[in-house]
Image (cartoon, rainbow, N blue to C red; front, top):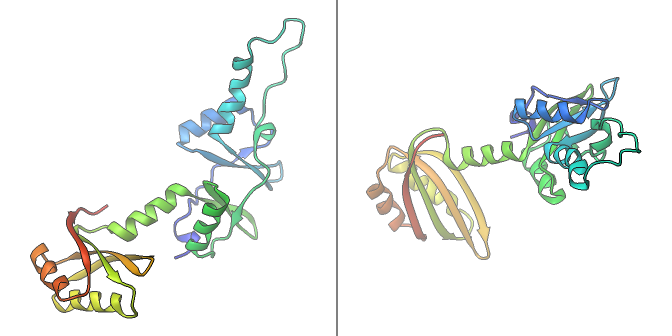
Length: 215
């Protein structure tokens, strides 16, 4: 899986000289939390969030009215508020690499760039959606969670047993925890009793089976 498979391609951008108030209003209308910022030539120069815009626009209110003898400051623009330290990725970057950058740098999005400039954005919300699709899938079925010893071939043993019983594996994920694996998979065409019988023959514990709808 790659960034290009899940990024938002209809990129909404702001210009450096856009006023802060209208830019915030546009973000609200579009349902956005972040917008890349470009200059007059369309070159990426920053990124702005709704939070930064709100904070900047609220400063005069918090400080009280400006002194009457002092001229009112010029309108705030996106260029005054944006973050110029932009983290980017490319369309062909593996999704897990992009997710790792976002997690390590503690950012909520990456601007996607190709040779022509910005072509999309991938956000933490996009990552959550991928996570849900991997674990839950799009088809109703039974979601099974088990803990198993972390020895080679355990995943193959479980999936083979489910397949031999006529189960249709819809999704599969696992995490290594110390010396064990936490395995979660979704299966159709079997009932809970069938799955209990299958798992009773395997070296697994902490079995949880529950009905899950598709997403």
